[in-house]
Amino acid sequence: MITLIGLSACSDMSVQQKQKAYRPLVAPVSSPAGVVAFRSRPETAPAVTLALLERGKERYGIFCAPCHDEAGDGRGMIVQRGFPAPPSYHTQRLRDTPPKRFYDVITDGFGAMYSYASRVPPEDRWAIAAYIKALQQSRANAQATSKGDGK
Image 1 (cartoon, rainbow, N blue to C red):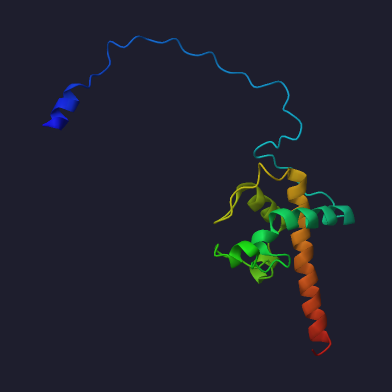
Image 2 (cartoon, rainbow, N blue to C red):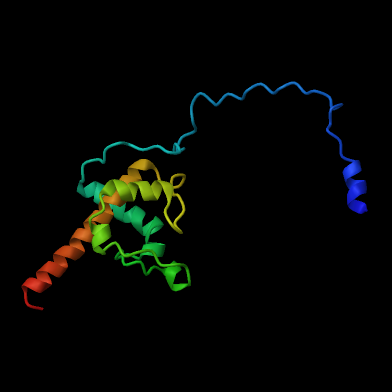
């Protein structure tokens, strides 16, 4: 009964006053300093230099290590406190992954990882991707050396 009373109070609003449309808003001519453009993707990675790797290591420590840990094994402090573990960067599948894929995951997120596009500028995303590849290579080289020494 209450439903019928409630429905009878509804109308098609055919007598509603017509409102004029708002004028379209115009974006500011220039963005404030430090703003990261969403979906900003340089097509090619910069050349890998010592400065790029150092920047990547610094940014990795800030943004990635809490989940992935400093070594890239996926056992960061957040994981130790119950968050789902990300995969180790040292699996064959991720060792075969090109740097662009790491850049895209930082930009878009993947699985439980959210997008860092608004937090990490594109050039730092490339630096992190280069550092991840260097981290993978250093582990692979250490393993190859230890196998070669008979250890």
